[in-house]
Amino acid sequence: GAGPRTVEGRLERIWTSTAAFLADDCLALGAIVSIRGYMVSRDSLSAYRAAFRKYLGDVNPTSTLVVVKELVAPQLLVEIAVVAAGK
Image (cartoon, rainbow, N blue to C red):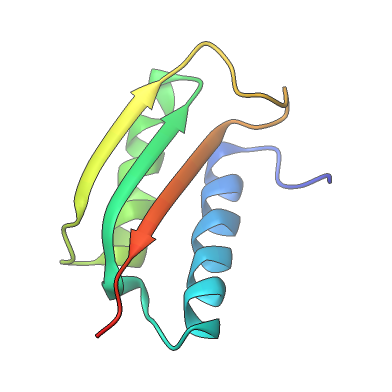
């Protein structure tokens, strides 16, 4: 559906949604052990890093970020996949 039109807005939605999904399984963002990120513009790197630090703080999971020509839906500017582990 329609969503934020800026990378910052998309990242905010991604991280708040991710936190909610993890909370459903009694996990926090600190449980993330791996992140794969895809974005369509290198110009978005500072926004990506800022959102990463805002939501993960000092947590440093393994992380890969790739700049791609486009994502499957034209309105998508960034996509993130996470793996989290519970205790």
